[in-house]
Image (cartoon, rainbow, N blue to C red; front, side, top):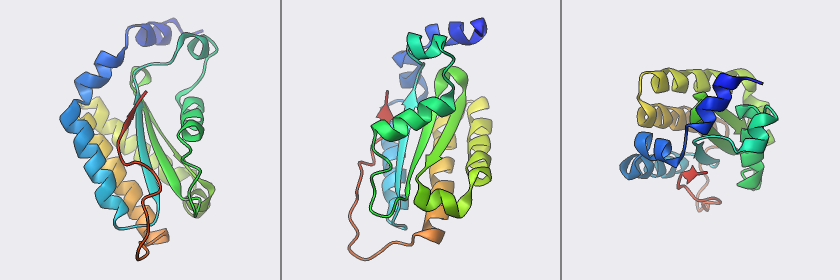
Length: 165
């Protein structure tokens, strides 16, 4: 049991999310998702969570495990071409995870997603949360554009708005 991690989670709350992602930033993220989805046939979701609840925290749940849960909860897997991508940020751990559905993951692999996460985390360490997320959305969108170009008359299968958990 990592006491430092537990203390970080216990001292993080929704106010931390509002501080680093004020309404203006959340609107910019939604706009970026909408703009990039116009260029490809994939679906991008962004979710941010201040901290884990007590039971998962004491059980040692990782950000990656939580991201997979959120991927399922938000039904990011439920797209026509299995090309949904979740960008998940757990603020208390300063950890970002990308979970991609099988249609896109098989074409790119874990290394691409990890590289995007590391770039985003570098921006976060410098205090540039909005810029880091926008860069991540753009990078994911570039890969989706290459592998799933936009189709004429395609519909938006998922909301573009960020999810604050």
